Image (cartoon, rainbow, N blue to C red; front, side, top):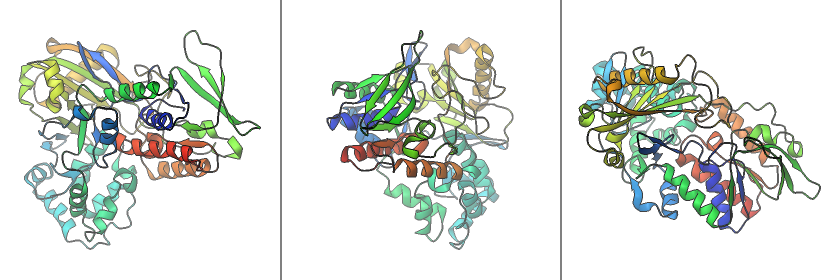
Length: 479
């Protein structure tokens, strides 16, 4: 197993439960990928992903299988806001990637304005052919609901979720099922969103884990190792070749300091759950993947602030704020008010203490070393570092939350930089993934999985990883 992110660990769990001896290697210093913990001002918090979509029930089922069902929690029902050049406004209470289910709802009218909401209402009466040929999320929403919905709702949400522009995202990848649901409602996106929400499991659209989503990784590692699996970090896969007996020979490189001797590993089955799959598998059994260009993803920098600020007790912007296009008074693309969003975080922090996390980095730029430690790598272009970055985060938090926050309130801070963590689900990336999967289908004993292939978010990653592992157990030609 190459890659010890959630995808790799989920696949490894399937394999060890099937009775297969399993070794997981990862070039980072710890398992989990973008799901990881860190300590800030004495609080153990998520350093990366902190929630998951509930849309298909796969993550909740995994948590239940790991004994964490009783620790699944829903966010506080405070709603979130968007920061625009025209001012602040609430995000739709019912929507999908910012696409409103009810265009005339008060919260939608407040953010779009009356003209924008009236234009969005046309979606309910426009012929089904309008937007039917659009391939991107931005193009489809603009055709059906107008530019205001794209600029003021969809763009901020997509920027926060995918670090991308909605005009670059393939609608079928970014919003699976939306096109089909709209088609069933005579083309209406609003009614399509309602249909999808009605078909979703009861409850909120996202959930988390009390104590932090990183507990999922701890539970996965514990389960894999309890069943005989081994997780080896700071070890990368450098090459894969087919031996004469049909087994796979994986050449490894040690990333410890000082490095240990390189080793070759022999295996009958190989799962590549890392974004370097195309490079690693190029040439294996004649597979031609050298020209495949997968999206590297935007580098993302997260700045966590722990603040002694009772003024935030009222949660002035609900659970957080997303930033719209063209805004020049902040650099952040999103802010999460963690202690307003999660009850467990508020309880851990105590009265008057708040956890705020700001995210920096959009579609511009490319990922750095995919194996870099979570506190390494290059920040997004021209973003300050060190104390200057913390000062910027304090200024941005003040603007986004509408209250004055300074270093006098700062109890602690942390900066985490992620590279290649958010591959943008563009049409080009989707085609590149299809090319990799097609090639891998012709490689006996090999499977691929991970966010780079399945899409961002655990709800996409988990079922894809399980399917990859099961295809090897069944002896099928995996893809």
